[in-house]
Image (tube, rainbow, N blue to C red; front, top):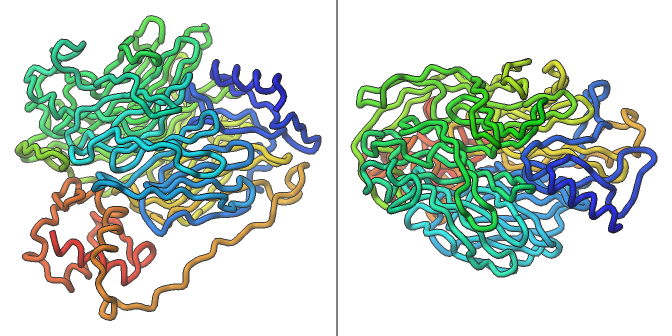
Length: 626
């Protein structure tokens, strides 16, 4: 790469400008110059905007599948994607993959073997710096991986899974540091954000999101003992202001989730955006969305930095409480608060009889936040419209187990939204009502097209200016992760994840975790034609019946971890789903098999599309031992 190009790319990253420069100085006369997607949200400011315009409102309907790659047989698949010099980098709960960005050919696969009992099998992607990839694991480790070979360079234990700590968020990298936070609010951890040396994995600083002692905000936990397990986990990714050297951190819910009277006070820094000095971890400022939250309405998505029409530095924040917030980064004052989904929140906390609230704990803005459309000068955000009845219960803190102190029952009706807003006032410009929750990344482009997807498995494209639907393509699995676009060899591609089983958000087309790449069909662009589609190789259907299957409890444990822990807990203690402890005394083996194969409407249906008869028998064998 020429020195001039390298400087341009560094300036683009530093100031959050979506400037793309050619790789190796190459410019393709027939199409756009090659571009990269260097971080979870494209640029470190979180805007997700692409200046590519080969795909536009006139030809987007000609998008066609180039190739696909099945990444796993089942489980969570919410990873953001990186594309660097022709290679896509992606993850599932344990594996890290490098994949050719035009053919879906796997270049290498790094498989992590857990060293302790995993808390929750999930991961949302990697960060890249200086030829290395960085990620966390479900058992509280951090990994550095050589981006060229897939070799693990170093591994550090940074969390304690026995306490419910794990790493699902995508780190950010800054001047030799790797910054990441521990997840596990619902297990009653004491959340923290840490920075590590990229070269060695040595910890440099840490900031506790649940303050104690003389730390700022400790007084907001009036019962000081409750701060020991106060939650405040971090589970998505972060945003950097390179000019000020600040990292913007979304902080999750307090614990126990549904018993706010157990932890009187504002409960800082839960449900807050916390701004830290990236070099030292020192607290700069914060903005709390909800105090003493009793409805699990945490801040999950990375904030997005932008400048309004008056030249004022702003931050847009999408929250699970169902609002889009605009906050001035200089004065720290809230400029607007605009609903992005149905809001019907009660005036009281959960009770044993139950209180109804909208959004519910799976509603609002989930792990992909607002994007900024430079062409239309607007903020675009996806959301979930799903209400629930919340009930409280006794507090029983047990390290490493769910600490809900209550439960919820989701409404039958659910859908999603994609909405655009004025960046100055927060006034809504347009909206699209999706049939299913929208949690995938939102990606506006200079072609006047905005991409995303829904949990019914539809890849979606809109006219950015009006919100008019232009494309709706069934992919066979829920879209729950990154949707990115890039150019290689004169062709603009769109890559995204499909297939996800993790929680009741994934009712609909669960699907098998799969990477898909699309491009314009032949004749729809001036660039060279895309490679012909490569059909996914589907495994032969199982001919084993439940009666003939030989039980394998160890495989059942593996499948339970991939598909069931989010609702039932890793030890079957129950959470959003019923407890499975002592199941054998309530259901015999045959009834358990039938229950998995034919679940109630409150459970995702995984058989036979995700789980075959052998898998069902294996899971039934494992949970019968709880």
